[in-house]
Image (cartoon, rainbow, N blue to C red; front, side, top):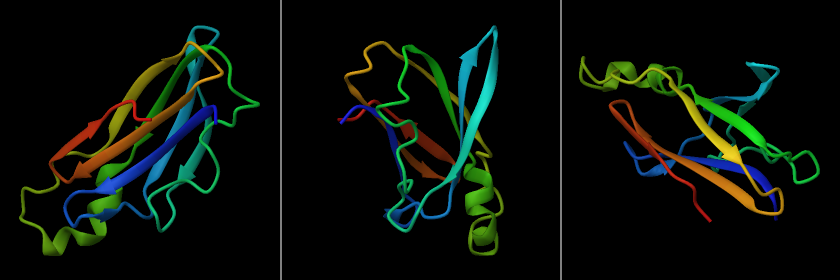
Length: 119
């Protein structure tokens, strides 16, 4: 499968990051253009690919993960300084081969995050 997919893992509780907002943009005409906003499902994934194989084009893209909004409902249960990371943006990357699958998982807590190109 080609295209772009993502998956949010909530490392604070060891579960999928359900309900996180993700903005997806492309660099076009010298500036960043928002293509769509997605929300993760109960499995921490988006219901549809971020970018389908048919839509994939060589170029520069970015994902913005709204981590602060995701953890805000849990603020009363967290230490006062826990809301350290608000929004991880941009996670910028390039598509250089549209026949390949680009999987970008986000592992997060209110004070840390990591992403990588998965398989």
